[in-house]
Structures are given as C-alpha cells and as structure tokens.
Amino acid sequence: MKYQICSRCIMDTSDPEIQFDADGVCNHCHKYDSRSAVELKHGAAGQRELSELVERIKADGKGKQYDCVIGVSGGVDSTMVAYKVKQLGLRPLAIHFDNGWNSELAVSNIEKTLRKLDIDLYTYVVDWNEFRDIQLSFIKAGVANIEAPTDHAIGALLYKMAAKHGLKYLISGGNLETEGVMPTSWLYDNKDWKHIRGLHRLFGKVKLKTFPHYGLMHMVYYVFFRRIKFVKVLNYAPYNKSEAMELFRKEFDWVPYSGKHYESVFTKFYQAFILPNKFGYDKRRPHLSSLILSGQLLRDEALREVDLPLYRADELARDKEYILKKFGLSESEFDKMMAERPHSYRDYPSNKWIFENLNKGILGMVKRFAAGQRAN
Image (cartoon, rainbow, N blue to C red; front, top):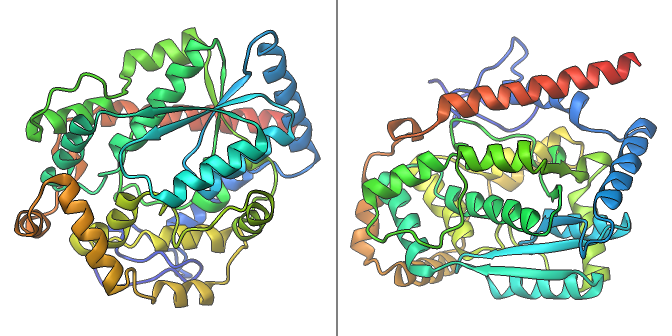
C-alpha cells in the first residue's frame, strides 16, 4: 500500500485497513464523529442523565458497603474515575490487578490517590508463573494483542467483585476523548476467553488455576442475570488529559508517566519496542489522534511528538534486561521471537464472529436509544 497519512489526524497506512475519503480524511475520523454524536453527553441533557444514573446507583447500593466498583492502575483515566465518583457522592470499591509489572511510581500514585479520596482498595496479585506463561504464549504466537490477558483479567475481577458485593455498576475509565481511535486490525477484543485460552493451549506449559477469566456463559450470567453494567462516566463532561494531570499533581501529589499506559513497565516496553519493531505499529498515533479529534492537541504538535524517539537508548537497555530476566529468556531467544513472522489474531481460535455481532448489536441499541431521546 502506498504510504498515506490522514489530513485531519495522524493515522496512516501502518493500519492496513485504513480508508481515506476524497479529502484525505480517514475512516477513524469519521467513526469518531459518529460516535461522539452518540456517546459524548456534555450538555444539560447529559447532566440530567448523569444525575439520574447517580441516583439509581445510590438507590441500588443502599444498605451495602459500596455502591459501585472501579478499576485503578495509577494511570490518568482510572485516577480521573476515582476522583469523579467521589465528586458525585458515590461509594466505590477500587480494584487493582497486580500482574507483576507495576512500576514503583504506579504503586505510589495509587496509594496517594486512594488515601486522599478515602477509597477502599482490593488488590489481586496474580500467580506469576501462570501469568508469565500466558504472556509468553502471546509473544510466541506472534500476535500484537499481548496485553489482552491483562485487560481480560481486569474485566473478570470487576465483574466478580461486583457480583460478590451485590453491585450492578462498574464505573469504567474508558472514554471517547482520549481513546476514541484504535485500529481493529492492530488489536483484538480482550473479552474473548476462547482466544486467550486457545493461544495458551498452543504455546503455554503451565496449567491455569487462578488466572481471573470469564467466558461467554459468564458474561450472560453477569450481564443478563446479575444486571451488571459498565458506565463510562468520563463521557458525561469534557475530559481534558492535560488539565486532569495538573489537577492530580495539586490534589494528590500524583506524578505523570512518560506515555499513555506507561504505569506498567511491560506495557511501556510492549508499546514502545515490541509493537513498532515487530508489527510496525506506533500506538502514539491513535492516542494522539484521539486528542486531535477531541480538540486537545493541534495536528502539528502531534506530528512533532510522533517524530520523537520512542525510547532513550539507556532506558531501552535497562527495561529490556529487566523484562527478559523476569521472563527467564535469553536475549537470543527473545530476538528470535521478534524476528519471526507476525501473525494476526485471525490465525488462532476465537469467538470473533460472536463478538463482532454482539458489539454491532450493542452499538445499534445505543444509537436507537439516542435517536429516541432526541425525538422526545
């Protein structure tokens, strides 16, 4: 494919499925515009909807120790959720999944934030031998979605703890303004336990006994029988990343990271080394494109930022040595895996058809609901 970059954001043909219109604007921009009309609820109607939602959450949680569950990683989005739910007068239980890769800075940011906000924390420390084996399975498989096991386990824990405490609401840090762009060709749905388990069965060695997970039947139980739902509270008001970080510095003595999701040592190495070197994916492009489309960053500024090196040489050498030692890999073993042909998630077992149609159905329901609200 001839190289082309979007004239509006900075997504380019490193996404093999990207499409451009006659003006050179990409499909990610058009998709963002369509989603923003439905998902962003910044006006008076959105505030009324949020107030009604908060009252339902409080009513459902009456007499219980908590009324909702949130996930915390020490990153900007999850910190904003913790701050927001306390502003709204909710009583959250914070859940943290410790997969063995936390940076000291992440641990410190979580502790300072939750202590200041007076939020209880439940931390699940995964069995390292199991988790190491799952991550190595994804690396050996040559797929790009190596972070899927972490994201899946977080979702499983949120559902499990909500059910345990009889709660119906999971307050998510997912939001359109900082995460609205991500090529589906780069990653795959982390809810698909069949895909994660299938890769592990092909390439893993350790039996999974304690790894948090949920399959399709678990989802049916949690969503339809327990009536547990995710709420993207950050879509109900303008969410500016830079302003949020400045607020956290003042309120919690929170210290920023060098990149999105870099609160994890492995995530930093994965995004800044494995993805660009093995797959040609620079995750700064979708992250910065989201900020362009939400009006938080100028395109020229994003282009200058994406031209900066992903890693300083000394940091790369340090992180690579640490990660390979923790994985129990020699440099030659790792380099061999990096040199092997990349694979798509489509090359392995999955419930792709089910999840694609499920996501389309959910999006259709949201659009129909929004259209009905506007008509009224």
